[in-house]
Length: 233
Image (tube, helix red, strand yellow):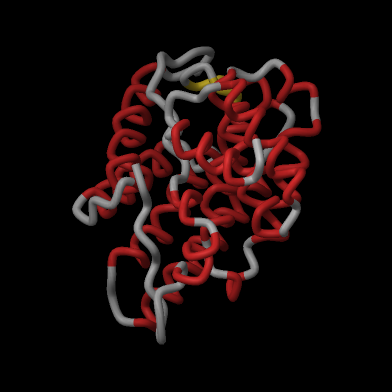
């Protein structure tokens, strides 16, 4: 699944980045596996449904974007202290900007999305490492949603510094070592995205090999192999 570029006042926000790394448009698309260690099974079921709608929006469905936004807004009404719901909710604003509207509206939506994601990151606590939804530590999935959204934004919004910081936190602790291969592979993928943006060829190459070793089902591994081959294997 590919995410379409977000529009901007004078040109497409993602044009320059896409020209330099066309394979990097694919963002977060975690498979909807069974929930685990979540205290509210009914809410978890609604989260999984909201996540499915979110993935349709990620794939480019403009009709799914407002539905995903509403679904996560409703979840937040029930659990306003969930950083995961808030991160997903924030990401829907970036997709809303992608889907259209006046230039000033798109800029406002992206800024609102960034602010919401930053609030979600600020809510993370040690206990979120222990809560799991669909087998994923809540803290790591929250960071992944944030990273994937911020990395995809145009440089004018300065999302990369926060993305780098959160990626270092996510991959630098013991929680990452024991995380499911799917989640590890997605985070390695974000390492590759940032490495390419920074022009660090060897780091990107290593990260791509790690992606292939994890073989996350939600990524197009053929694209990953093609990119790795272009870099010399």
